[in-house]
Structure formats: C-alpha cells, structure tokens
Length: 141
Image (cartoon, rainbow, N blue to C red; front, side, top):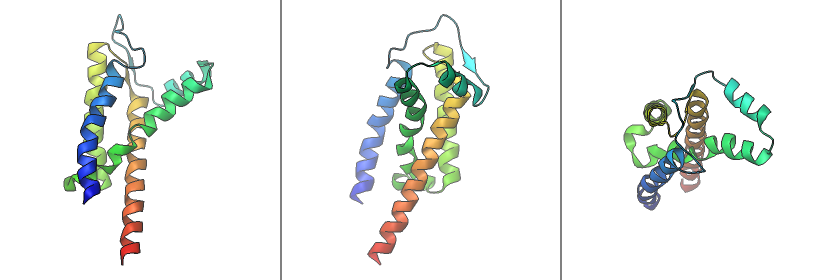
C-alpha cells in the first residue's frame, strides 16, 4: 500500500523530468527544420556506427530503455493499467504524442526507434513488476 502511494507521488515529477530532458535537456536546441526518422532499427544502428564515444551510445540507446522502466509499474497505482496490453497501449499513445510534439516544435526528432526503445523499457518494467508481485505474493502465503 505504501509503495503504491510512493509510486503515485514519484511518477508525476519523474514524468515532468523526462519531458524536460526530451525537449530541453542534454544540450538540445531547436532544429532549423522538422526532422523525422521512421526507419526502424537502422537509424539506431547508424548512430552506433557513427558515434566515436561508447559513453554516448550507452547514454542514448540504453537511456532510452532504462529511463522508461518506471512506466511499466503504472499498474501498481492505476488498476485500469494492470495488464500489459493496456499499459503498452496507453504508453505508446502518449509517447507518439510526445515524439510528435518534438517534431512540431523542432525541439527534438520524431524517431520510431525512440518509440520502440521506450516501449521496450516499459515492457521490462512491467515484467519486473509482475516478477516482484509474484515473488511477494508467494513469500507472504
């Protein structure tokens, strides 16, 4: 019960923090034109091939997964998002809107790979949550 209250308190400021990073953080600037990358996987592979520093690859690629793991726990606090399908559908809808806003404001790039990586993070979070729920349930009985 306490964990649900903490999560509800935590997820809103965390979401605001991520939105800040997605639009203004990490040295972002407004592009001169709108940019869209809709070729799945290839833009990420191209980024990895053309990036010299491993730290940049880890920060961008793994960050796009890890930073979204907490959204896989939405079902803890919001019963209507208890199952994976509901969680993913709501998340994908939200992240497509955010990516679209990045495109229209030119404060980022609309990237299919970001949607895929972010959603994978939500999936991992959901799996972690269900693992702990089953583990905790079995240890109580």
